[in-house]
Image (cartoon, rainbow, N blue to C red; front, side, top):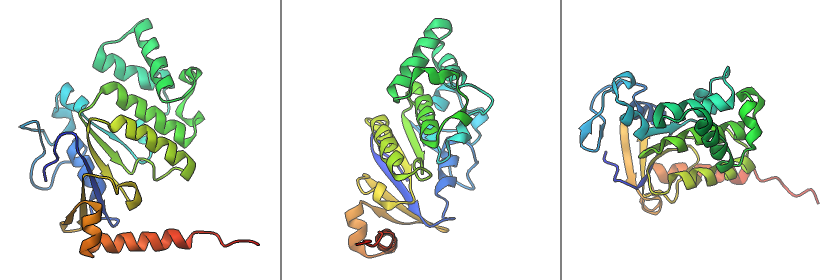
Length: 231
């Protein structure tokens, strides 16, 4: 599979089809069973520890559960500040100013710098995770069901943040809810054996295959959740 620069590719499939595993292989968190991962014409090491700083910065993932990326023993000032120092060399007042600017960018009060992750809501944690990603200025973004654990209101707000973050970048979106990826440039449909379909949303619906069946089931489920009138 090749992902063109600046395009958004969605990866969908039933549970256990390997969606999140694919994302972890690309980022180096898991080694591939077979094959390689290439970026800008060069092969990437299958092990995260063997990738260079620029390679690490260029490929970033935002997880379904932001706690995965947030150290519970560190204040937000440290969680956001350490990558600023590691990747950009910012220290002291410059680092503090940059942290405050990032919090404002993700619509969090600057006094949150003294809070720990446990003192934040799920949506606020995800915003901090987004801030950590913004500062690295990655070339490739991977969203691993980044909003599926949030309530509907918060999900819409975070999706807007993610949309702004993805502009002009190559994006891989791991999704369960198909309604979130209908505008993707390409959709890959996985099962336990690999890719079974690929194309745009309208093309896949028209084929009446695996994706169309998943879409229909999700639409029926969402319609069934609509509460009846009490009048």
